[in-house]
Image (cartoon, rainbow, N blue to C red; front, side):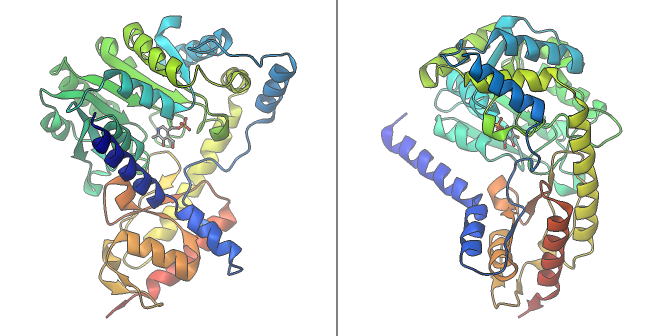
Length: 406
Ligand code: PLP
């Protein structure tokens, strides 16, 4: 890719990242000595990493597991990952079909870096996790978006997906449950998506299942790979420990897919990072092998918080909120607030204007929907204690009630 083009892509990335960093602004305000800022902007669990996981890391460090780890992951963690897929997803992967990286994010990067050439298209359901289009663009590819409207519960429609796939499509990315909407897909929907993908054998499928354990529907998570094993030769599962075990800072993610793809991704990783932190890998293995009860406790807590925040949002004038199936976000529409003026005299002409005014006037940080490709919405994280959620909703409610038509 041309230097100037790469520079533009990197600049766009920096801007988009800045958009999602209302949290930083929020901290700035807090330091300014004003009212305490409540941040519902971050996409990471507020729970501590489970104690036995931390202990396992300490033991590994003391035992001298401090040298360069094997490039694709330690044997212990790779085996734990394989066992996880067998136990939870009914999928049997060989050692050469697993790659451990520095977070799920590096798995995404490795996969796209290994396979995209300029002009290749990547189909991305919208709203999306911002890293998908940013990484695609950074690597010279072209994102092609498929809208998942609120009226459909933000769920991906197989017919709409079919319309977005063309001869230049290299990947289709599926993120279930989804960041930022929490939308998932039932078995019938997944089967319809599988049928579409079967008709396009040149397309690779990236299933980002990093939120698989944070699903609140009566149907538990079903991996597309286990439902349509015929797609496995061109399907990569991205997952990790960040969200499930409250381990964002440990930076461990993993990918499972065909050996030839994993081999190409490993070359990218080898040149970039030489593998993932050895001590974190010991911690991740302990998380996957340890008491899974903690996962259920966190899931139940997120579910209760989802119910709490959705009820509060639905009571605010000008706000609508679909019920998220999973993850730890709510994605309310603020369409009914657009065109109004805030109590502080700010014109709310976009979700970004809403988010900034809410931060300035009520000291609540949220992320505007434009950062995820669909406006006018907000993303509120439920990774916060009940008291903080209640107070944030009380302030947002007061803000909405104070909006006037100029
Ligand atoms: N996929 C999705 C949808 C995410 O929201 C995130 C993190 O926010 C990731 C992947 C990557 O997570 P990590 O790199 O912390 O493992």
